Amino acid sequence: MKKLRVVLSLVFLCLIAVPISAHAAELIPVQKSFSSNMTTSSLPGAGIRKSLSVNPGDYPLKSNNSYAGYLLDSYYTYHDLTFQTVSNYSSTQMNVQILYQSDYAYAKDPYITVEFLKNSAGTLQYQGETNFNTYGSTYGVMNSYVPKSLFQDQPYIFLRIGVLEYASDLYYQDVIQFKVSNPFYDRTPPAKPTVYSVDNNDTGVSGKAEPYSTIIVKNGSTTLGTNKANSNGYFTVATPTQKAGTQLTVYAKDAVGNQSIGTTVTVLDRTPPGKPAVYSLSDNQTIINGKTEGYAKVEVLQGTTLIGQTTASSTGDYTIKLTSVKKAGTVLTFYAIDRSGNRSAGNAVTVSDVTPPGAPTVNKVTYTSTSITGKAEAGTGVYIFYGSTLIGQATSDSYGNYKAAIKAQKQGIKLEVLVIDKGGNQSSSTWATVY
Image 1 (cartoon, rainbow, N blue to C red):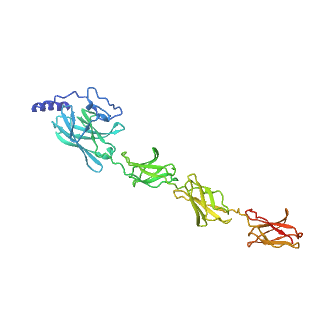
Image 2: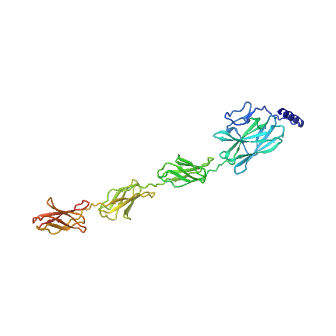
Image 3: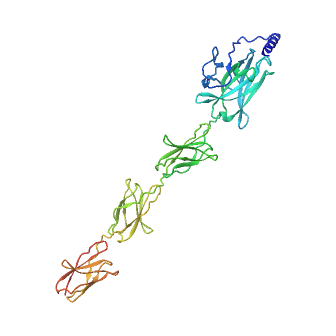
């Protein structure tokens, strides 16, 4: 059959007196499909046009409406190809348009295959093909409808076009290869992600970004975690807890690899300070010293009333001056509030009694008295000595009155009466002469 077609074609050529082109050359079959044994070397005796190269650099860039090259088939017929454009066909498909021209409608190998390849880390990979039967035609546009998704991350579309005698042939009679710009290449980065507040107790970063984008959380140049936003754009990226004041930068990267500008957030302090320490608090003090978190505010409350406040130094030392001394037994509560507003638990401190009671008064004592009476600070212990011998004691009541039982003492001796309060503070002595 092939021989008959060749003979008829030669007769036809002679009849119309059209000479065969002078640049006809020996044909070397070219493998039709990519395979695992592909190399970048040219076939023997052939130029780069007939190479099976998977090197993107071997594919020249063709602009719109530019001549792409010719294919020479087994009939020595030329098929001229002009790349026209890549246009929008639908929301999901693009149309790669190639103008086909030939001097002959029948005396030729009629099948044209357009292969599509993409650059994957510097090596071209076969993505698919479209096939055209030009039998009976000398002119026409070959429209290849290609999914945009195949090349959305590719700035170029790589084309390899071959001619075959039969659609089932495993080898091309001739091929050309070139690349064209992809007008649907996504060069637009996602918008900056919205990032919700992050504190020093959090184990993740949340927010909203472009749906399905990859979210990257960094501390400086260190990546703390990544995750994908859902269909509504919401995301949560698991991260280690970060120190308050740390600045985190969050990026969104789309499926094509376009990365957004970073959104920077500062890790908030949500950890309250410890209870402030109070060095001493007694009933003769108006100056109170202690220690807390650096730069924390210290407040002193008596009940619910604020009676003093100050700000600690960088090392946490603080001094508060009260307007007056506080009665022993009074409870004051100290709080520390850090610069983020976190409030510590209260440190309740009872005012200690370090002030000695006043000397007691003693009513007249005679040699017949069997008790001693008088007044002292309320609730204190009253002690009566003759020399170093304790001869009586009592506790003053809530009004300060006391009555201590004693044995009758000799006329003319002196008795010592003193008071010790609940804080262990001892009064000065009062001397009473037995009459």
